[in-house]
Image (cartoon, rainbow, N blue to C red; front, top):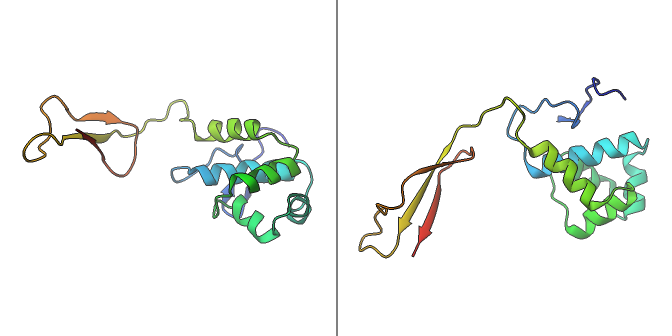
Length: 142
């Protein structure tokens, strides 16, 4: 399959597709990498599930980003796919890394000084920017 080919299965784009429409979650990226590896090896869900000792339905849910597998299940699935955990982690990290030319909106980070009488925001703790997310992060300092 060429690098320019895009494959979208059950709403989860292939890592090569680079077509995510919402912020990518770890489990989405993990599932996409596992699915791509399975398809590239020419294996069916039932083949991998039998080798890994997990149900076909559960493996399908992992691939679709609906379930987060335990470390034991993940080790069994990667072994069934002849993929190391380190290689899997690198591929997932690559998917989660910000793309060149993309920007993310900063989110406010507020540090509260718990040693003050009313928990007021510390004068020394100014609001700083952090990577994008939908909510502010509050750090508590004592």
